[in-house]
Image 1 (cartoon, rainbow, N blue to C red):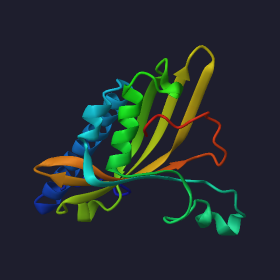
Image 2: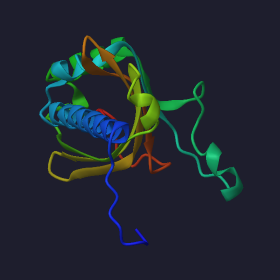
Image 3: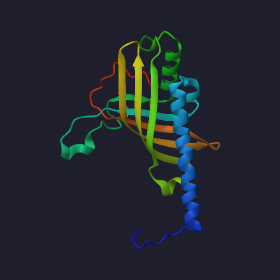
Image 4: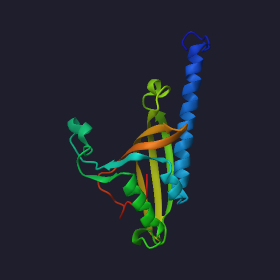
Length: 189
């Protein structure tokens, strides 16, 4: 404030600002709770956070010239690392939970760190049943004695309010690497 005066936000502006803060905090709690469920291998509970029509999508990164930087991921209809619906995610969970999944026996130790959570369209979000949320992630995985993976990137989620609760309706996962160094993608993001 160049003038040195403090300006108070009053009236409808403060109501809007408070509503935005409350909504942002609710979204953060949802994403942190989801990360806890995944870290604790409570996958069946995690599935309850997903809508029946979810699209869980991880396009492939490409190396492109600077002038083409907006085209550095594969498109919606192109090949992807992951492109799952609720049925496929449920099958993946069931496979891991058998205890005989070759890539998860013994079980990996996984830690999700979620940050930079923000409402992509904050003005629209306050009155909408669907929210577009951006975040960053770091997923650490340690397997057996020597296998360690750090997967870092960003996500764009669509959260939908159903019966008063937030549910994940869409997740776009963009890894900050174009060559997958991990041996598999058995973890969820």
